[in-house]
Amino acid sequence: MRLIRAVVGVLKREGKLLVAERPQGKSYSGYWEFPGGKIEADETGEAALVRELQEELGIDVILAKHWLDYTYSYPDKTVALEIWRVDDFTGEPHGKENQQLLWVTYAELLSLHLLDGVRPMMGHLQSLMESV
Image 1 (tube, rainbow, N blue to C red):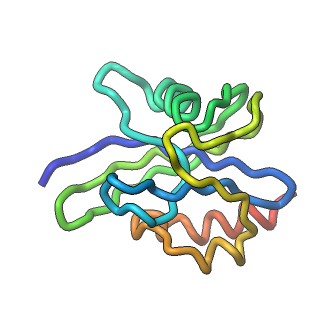
Image 2: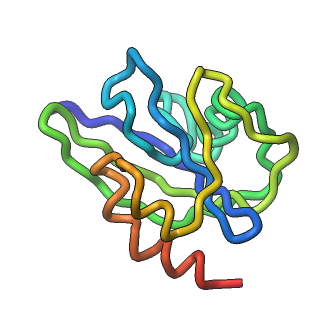
């Protein structure tokens, strides 16, 4: 089974989290996830986060903190995820890759059709949303 290293950015604003719907034509299209993508062979997680959020959302990361690491296995691959909390950025996020974006509360997040790989984060996300 192949191993993919990936990075995820958790953006929080006014009590809501930013999520993106996977566009048509991509695997798991129609599922919701947090923005991010693959870490290239020559990249650090932080460099990949900055690059991916610029490519996907058109924002520039000012301050991000490495928050969580975990591995999730799908039927065809295993994904090693680095989760980063993005505490400051410039620009207004918009879907540059034809993906729909939503700012959602934790309760709204629970009602979305989430990628299975997001589920292990849920308890941590709830704690994040309850913090000031």
